[in-house]
Amino acid sequence: MIEILTASYGLGGIIAALFHIPQLLRLWRTPEAVHALSLVSWLGWFLVSCNSTAYAALVNRDPVFLALCALNLACQAAVLVCMARAYLVLWQGRRTIGHGAVG
Image 1 (cartoon, one colour):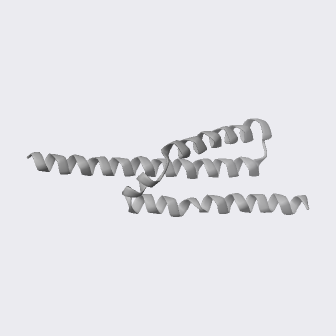
Image 2: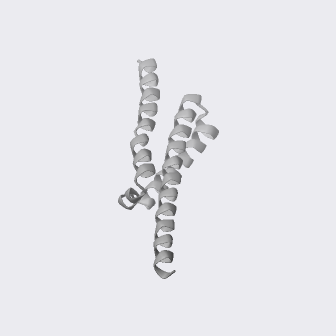
């Protein structure tokens, strides 16, 4: 029974990471979608994942748990990077539009 739970936990962590892909694709393709996301929430989840990863590395020391925590952390970091990119794209677009109107 322990082996089944361990395997399902590992598989569940990988599947959970895959659920970040639609969010990443939407942000990459449609920068305006960033306005529908909460930066505070994503930063909060990222900080909690930093703590979980540190716990897994320094206290728990289970390699599967550490790998899943690190994977989750990487996915959340990727979303934050895509959010930053989206804000930059939108900001540059506004700046170009504003500059064009003046010149």
